[in-house]
Image (cartoon, rainbow, N blue to C red; front, side):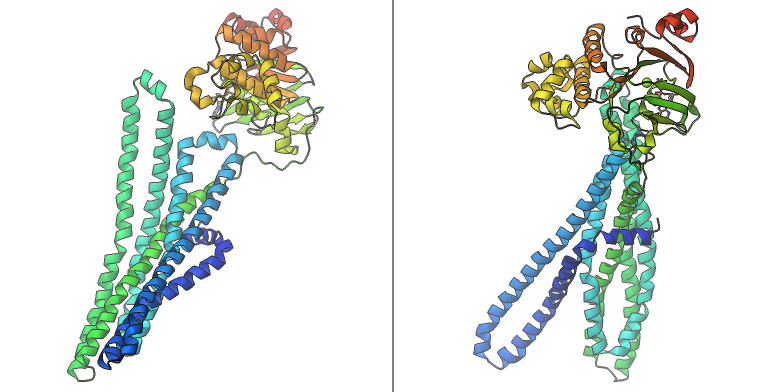
Length: 574
Ligand code: ADP
Ligand code: MG
């Protein structure tokens, strides 16, 4: 997106605050009048009061002086609060918009962008926008001051003012040049920081592996490289921020020099008084500050744009999984039908021309060597991704024609990872539903989890983060099963739900799973024979192709792939 388009888009966030914005500018204009009023006051004191010996006025003036400062102070506070509020409102809106968009981006986007990186965008990039936003609002004062001073100068000597103004267009050059640089280096620094946070986040969440495999140096050096880059980029940002000021001063000095040259000649010729020329040059000198202020507005804008650019690019990312369907899934729409399904993560086909059906109420087991594409199939059903070719139908309708929430509502998944939020056990079980405490306890009972949950310090109200590592893999898994039970979805997908567990926990979890599977349509990905043997049908997958299907006994008798998988104990004999 072009910088001008980014600016326009950023400005749209200010629209709802137009009135407050105008009020802030008004307060600024009033504030800009205060120094002038002070000068007038001093002049009055000198000429009309002290020289004219006006005692009545003398009694009033001290109050006028204090009143002026009170008004000045109120204006400062009022304007400050107003501009801050606008800035905070804008970035709060922006941050929420980005987060809600992230919630609806597809699984593949999130896989590509490490959590730490995305979090850095949400904090530093949003803050960069705030920094710029508040800067822009505040810096509006400078052009006002500039105009007032130029007006005063023109009033004193229009001809010399013209000479001084002649150099002003030159000022645009450093502003534009360093502004561009600032935007680029600021963007590079934000990107680098996001990368740094992504990698650091990954390292910290994998600390066990880092420690066990002695990877401290490797991860540390990786951090050092990015950290050093960050230092250099910060220097670029600093320089690009600093440079316009001095360059503008030099250009302004050229103007003042020209005025001195022409004005000096006028003084020699007796056309202008020496005092007049000096007063004029003082006025010109005062122009420097507002000029630099204007360049500051520009650099703050550029930094805000650099932050906004990456946020807008997140907002512009369309989820690969579009939610455009309108059909509603019901408890009776349960038969799944894969038709010529092909899938590809971008480096070669992972699934090729898959054709199979899972009838209503059927338990189908999916087996195959690791990497054959089993989890990919499991992820296609709740549409974490869509097939690249072919289609998957539920109850005779393409998955894409269902409203996404309605489709997902009819599917429960228990996978190997057993993810729990840092919340209470009860909230983890009820996640995504509005279950009553009784329903939660019932679900935990069915999932063989009630017993150990009751033994926890605060029972169902124990927070998972308080427990830290105290929950075993089997316990976590049973909480996840309770969650799936509460969901009461007609379709159930089990992706190696018991494979990470020891034999004892597996028995408890398997029992829970058997109860969960009752009267549902099930796709069970398993590597243990115990689950597979009881399935109505077994599908054998190899390198993304369906190579065999049938019952356990029939497949053993066929002495094909399945028989070999069992022989090589890829499917464990439990
Ligand atoms: P399984 O569950 O049978 O072990 P997967 O479905 O997880 O197999 O993976 C199938 C193939 O797709 C593997 O070759 C794997 O490397 C690849 N794969 C899985 N996930 C991704 C991903 N997010 N990006 C790229 N390739 C992937
Ligand atoms: Mg897998």
